Each structure stands twice: as C-alpha cells, then as structure tokens.
Length: 357
Image 1 (tube, rainbow, N blue to C red):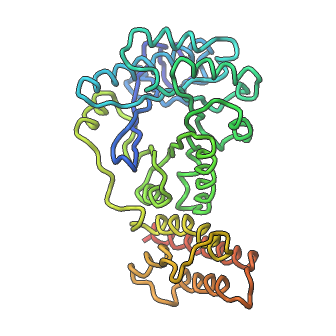
Image 2: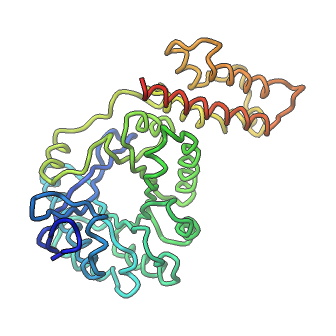
C-alpha cells in the first residue's frame, strides 16, 4: 500500500483502466483506443499516473503494462462482437526491456486472446536510457517479430529519441503534447509539427498527434492534412463502458475541412502548408506554368471575416507578395523570413485577442 501520497491506494487492487479514442481524419472515424492507467484511492478519487507511477518498482510497472494490455484486449473483443474493429495502444516502460525479454511476456499475454497482435501497438515511454543502448534495436525487433507494432511516445521531448529514430524498428510516432497544447500561444510550433510529419513519412511511420484539446487546434491539424489525432477535442479518457457506447453510437468531427479552415489558427496552418509549394514555383524548382496562384487561405479567411486591406496581417501579406513578385528585388530570403515572422507574431496576437473577447 502507498503511504507516501496524500491518500492511500493498493497495487494492483486499485488499478483502473481508462480509454481514450484515436481518430482518423481521412477515414472520418475512430480507429483505435489507448489504454491509460489510473488508480482509485480509498475515497474513490481517481489518481493520475504521475502521482503513483514514481512509487512503483520495475516489476510493478511491468504488471501495470500487462493489466492495461489485458483490459484493452477485453474492450476490443467486446467491440469485435459488434462488428467494430479497432486497434489498441498501451504504454511500456522501456527500461524494463534492459533485463527482460518483453517478446516472451507479450506472446504469453496474447495467447488467450483472439485479437491479432498486429492490432496492438506497444508505446515506449520516453524515460531512462534504454533507447540509447545497443540492445534496444534487437529487443524491439524481437517484439516486432511477434506481430505487435512499436510506437515512440512523446517524440520531441528528448533529443536522444530523435537521434535514434532512424535506427529503431518503429511503426508509429506520437508527438509530445507540449508542441500541440500551446499552439494558440505559439503558432510557430506548427512548423515543427510539419517537420515531424516529413520525418514520419521518411521512416514509413504513422504520426499520431496527441494533445488536440481545442477546436482551433483540431482545425489546424486538419488544415495541415494530418490524419491521426487524439485529445480532449475528441474525447477525454473514459471507462470502458463509456468508450464502447461512444464507439457504437459513432462520432463525427465538428464541421470544417482542410480547404476551408474554421479558425484563424487553422487558416495560418493552411498558409504554412502552402508556402513551400509557392516558394518552389517562384524559384523555378518545379516546371509548372502557374498564371494565377490560388489565394492564400489565411487572407481568404480574414476577408471572409470582415478584414479590410489595412488589417495588419493583410498588409504584411501584401508586402510578402510584393517582395516575391518584384524581379528587381530578387528572391530575398532574409526579407521574406522577416515578413513571415512578422505575420506569425501578428497571428499570435490576433488569436490572443480572440481568446480575451
């Protein structure tokens, strides 16, 4: 029993599995669930992982992962009976793999389940130094040989995981939530999200965006043509019976599309997505004749919402276009970057003003 926290709990008796859905924008449906551990204390209050996991030893953490896998498989089997096929993700502390063969543990747990291992994704938490060890590649490959998929969780939270990604056998990348949750305050982070998407594509790995907590952030992910998302804008973690009811009932995203963003953040994301293509066309890197470039989605959004030509973002964009199109000025990268930074800051200020009103 834990006596170090504010309230007492027992392991494993008080462990509770909660589930959060993963949504595919392209398929327009929930495609998977993540099993998340919670602890219920003596008063009935739920305790989040950061409040109890530090008090667990390595064997208890291994057992916690096994319990989440078993609970998740039970949910998949219930949904299978309804004709609904989803995938499952669960977390594993990678340091456990240093001294143990997780492939044997995984196969043993899967023996009694009709769910195919390929529908299960093992998420490696960003902790310890396992990913930097030479043994990591062999241990992960042994796991992958069982059919399970491997994901790196919280990518971007540690420089080491970025360095090792090119060498590890991974199927999925989950971007650290800190880059997503503060997008309204730091829209420049959208460029980092784009970079991780390119990296995932190069590695033939799926990218899952966690921390999609608000509708503007969801709108921005849609505008960037990202597919797999997870966060409060879809649903908070919930007990199994609520998750099953939600999936059976069906879920639709709020209205909006990549072509017609519904928020200023989404419109700015669409602007960023368009920028590399327009730059390449103007530099002559792509042999395509474009007589009339399509309108900038950011400016189109502002005009639809009543912005005039003297609006600061519209005026800055006019200067951006002027520099790009004037042959006497040449292609001044430094000037263009300065104006893009100015637009980025103006967007940030406009979003902040919207939130205050």
